[in-house]
Amino acid sequence: MTHSRASAGGAPAPRRPAARTASAPAVTQQVTFLDTRDLARTADFYERILGLRLARDQGTCRIYHVSDGAYIGFCQKNDVPAEPRGIVVTLVTDAVDEMCAHLERHGVELIKEPADNPPYRIYNAFARDPNGYVIEIQRFWEPLV
View 1 (cartoon, one colour):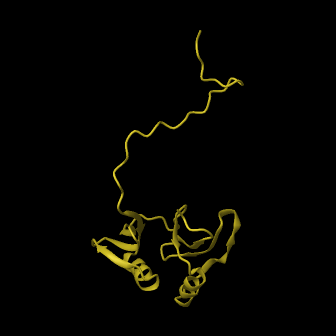
View 2 (cartoon, rainbow, N blue to C red; view 1 turned 90 degrees about the horizontal axis):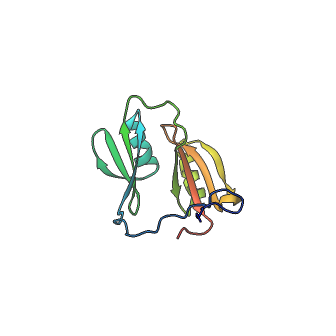
View 3 (spheres, rainbow, N blue to C red; view 1 turned 180 degrees about the vertical axis):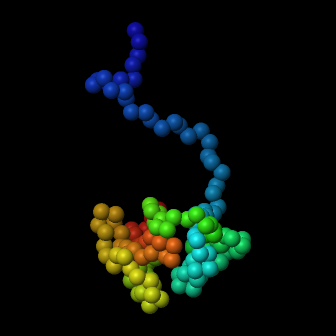
């Protein structure tokens, strides 16, 4: 007699994830790097307008401290697409409305005004940085765990 992993309907039974046998080493920091054509203009936006602290200047790359162990870096490249797609930089704050007003005072146009987003249980707004990357300003209805 042979044993099959097929379910009653003949389809294979869903695979269960492999048991975890060892813990991965702890991650202490996270850096997301994005490309830019204009590092000086990007630096002005992230330092002066968003108020992020420059954590490391590597010449053609600049890394900014976002919060705790989270960082965002930008590297000067000549072959960056004019309109980046599929990238959203989400900044989480309890002060969504205040951050949006601050951005508008500095000439940053909102592409979505602050509003509740019930399917995701968030309050959020969207703007663009000088590179065209979408910046989401967000507050979770309940804090992440």
